[in-house]
Image (cartoon, rainbow, N blue to C red; front, side, top):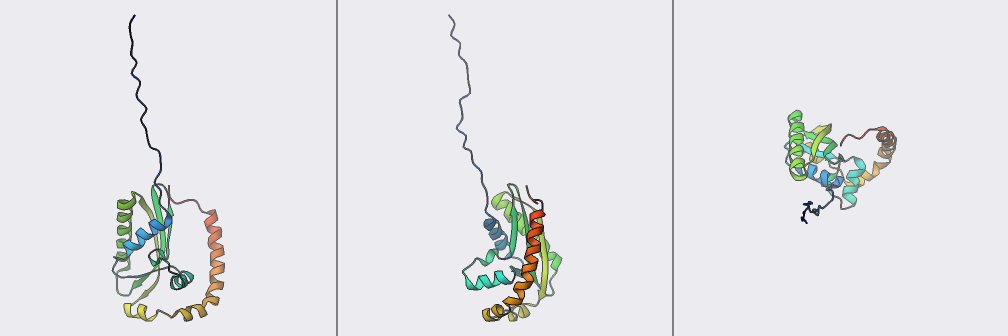
Length: 167
């Protein structure tokens, strides 16, 4: 009789799992990255976001930054206020490069879309002087609320119909 031995590969104990990132984490990486950009005065979260920042201890780092996070990619949208006299295209390019670099280094995700709308341009002094008291902002809330309701309704319908931007 002949003994035959069969070599069967041993089962490896593979660990399954998946690494994901909450939108807030990606928004925070973006927000901290933008702190270093010269000429960027503010990322605007809109009227109600700014009120919430004053009323509640919220994280201003993520205010006004909207993201869509996939398994491999990130898309980001924001509105900004820039300093008068600065090269706005240069500010945008610096923002985009910093965000893409930091996202890739920290998460491995690729920035595939980076939409920035410049909503105002001011001198540093004017920007600081334009800061209003909380009471002034609350008083004007009613008018702004009506405008935002119709815009939010349209945005919600558009978002429902939109295809995902990231993989």
